[in-house]
Structure formats: structure tokens, C-alpha cells
Length: 238
Image (spheres, rainbow, N blue to C red):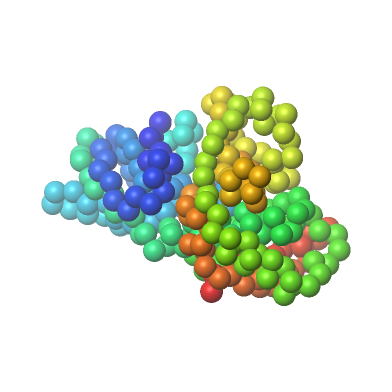
């Protein structure tokens, strides 16, 4: 199991680590990592590993069985050795844009209060798929509502509940096809806002900005019909 350092500090750009495994596919496993692995529609992080006498580019990051995080090199050459002490350097600009888009998508699910059937996060834009049989209505009005929420400068925080507590509050789960991971005894929630001023609260394992003001202005892009009941709504960073 890899210690998920990005959970402790989503803003960490560099961190030390020790190589605990080189996989048969040429991936690198560290004892702890700031690199977020592909999951929940958020892409795996990229960056560089450096050590005395060498460095290697990391193209992406994935998770395998047992919560082990694997850093995937762009080229499997000049690898570190087992037990090697390394410095992880995150491609911060890319990650931070993922954090901004991801947090904005949480708020998009507030201004469009319908079940979510899918989603994806990118560095420039993201999208959510909604169970939306009828047209979305006034796109300009949706965009205005979303930007007004962002401008409220709400704090984004995490908290944890048990499986049983989530079962008692099924309305917290907005996604239709993907359920929060269970088995560890606790589930992570992301809260946007405070107390009675909470705009959104839902299970999520991704990385987010600490305040909505960091998202900046956003634009609603295309709204596409995808199947009989699904519509895809695109969101762009400005």
C-alpha cells in the first residue's frame, strides 16, 4: 500500500520518497506519493523523479490492487533502483488546473440538480453527463448561476463518515453508475461551504482547490444529447 500524500496536502509540489517496487511493466512504486492516480474521471498526475545521478519523466500515474500507486515512466530507461531515495516533482500547473476544473464540476452538479451518469476532468475543461431527458434550458442563466456560486469564495474541506452513515444519507451520492469505494470503514466527503451555507457535500477521492475563488471565471460550453435521457454538459476555464 502507498501512503497517499496528496490526501494530506493537495498543494504539495515536491516530496521525498523511497522506491519500494519496480513492477514487471516498468512502473515505479514509492512508499508515499504526491502523484494522484487516475480515478473518478481525474487523470493521473505527471512530473519528474530525481535522485543522485539521475532523473526520469513520469507520464502518468495509476492505482492497482491494494491501493498501490504506480508511477508510469514516459520511457522505461535509466530507472531508479529498489530502495533508492528520490525526489518527486509534480507537474504542478497541470495538476492545479485539474483541481480547479474538478471543484467547478462539483458546483455544476449544484446548478443542475440531476443525477450524474458520467464525467471527465481535463486541464482546460471538464464535463458531466446528466440524466436529463429534457433540454437544459437557458445556458447563459446556468453559467451565471455557476459563476455566482464560485464568487461566493466558499472554503472546500474534507470530512469522513462510515459506510453506515452514508447508507443513511443516500442523497449524498450524485453519481448513478459509480459508488464510493467501501471496505476501509470510512468514506471521504468533500464539503463546499460551511454549515447552513453548504453548497455541496458528496463523496469524492480527488484533489480540489481550498477555496472556490481559486477556480476563477468559467464558461458553459456545448450541451450535447447523449442517448435517450443523457445530456453532456461541458465546462471551460476562462
